[in-house]
Image (cartoon, rainbow, N blue to C red; front, side, top):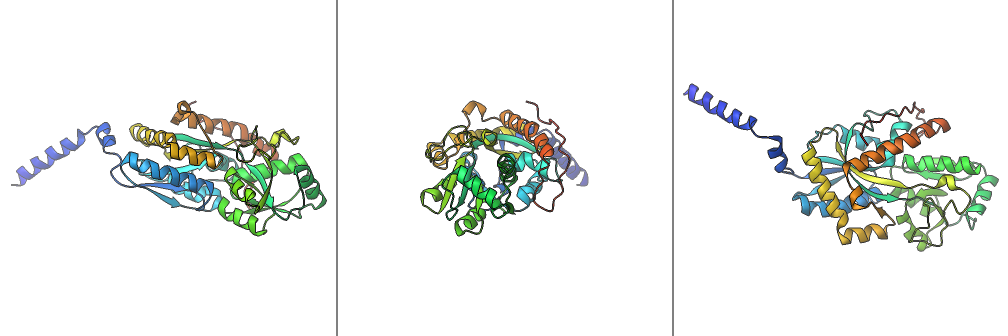
Length: 340
């Protein structure tokens, strides 16, 4: 009896060993997928993640559960995502701040450029310089004059390192000084701006709904051309500050080591979701730009990561811009991990 049991066990083990990785990939996903959103609910990262998750659910045959993990400019959420099992059952959504710039601002528990496998770039978005509605300045030159007249008398909300970088560049370009106030996401920073608790906020175009409602003001956009949602708001370049031209991006990521077949399935579902007319319409309404279909690839996202690190890490080091106080600046040594 024991011999027969042993033979059956050996046969079963041999059968399992003969199953190819492709066969395993064909069963993916076999359970719900978790998407780490390293920002507060209600902000642009959260909105984008939920919009994609709903559409991708039908394509993958499994729900995608949003998990908002806030704090430390996204580092807490991405530390969890980077350490997840590389089987495609936990993915993360992020942007240039969370998946590139954090590596220049902070000592991390993971290698920001090597810990993640790119799935697809999602959208591009400029920033808008917004202010509480009681700020007396009528346009950007008046705002700069007002800030110079009251050095360190104003405050700016900082929900992520991209916003810190832009605020620091704005100070450098205009010769102004103001206090940085850190937030766990764009949504709480906007709430405080509307309430008048802070004075300024570099925000994303979906905040223009608050501008149209008269709840806040907007002075300039970082895009090369005026945004369709607010054609009356000038660009920084038009206002004589071309160095503040900026276009950020968002992407979808899996832990490094996730099988290519799984990445391909996730990429196909992402591309299909971004092609959905309802999704595209919603993204346009939020002021977000879409990448052309031929650029919605893992390689394209890897190239974006490399380019951002190569451009911004040396500048962050040169200008001595640090992360949230009391974090000490760390060396910004660029390493190119992803073939482009």
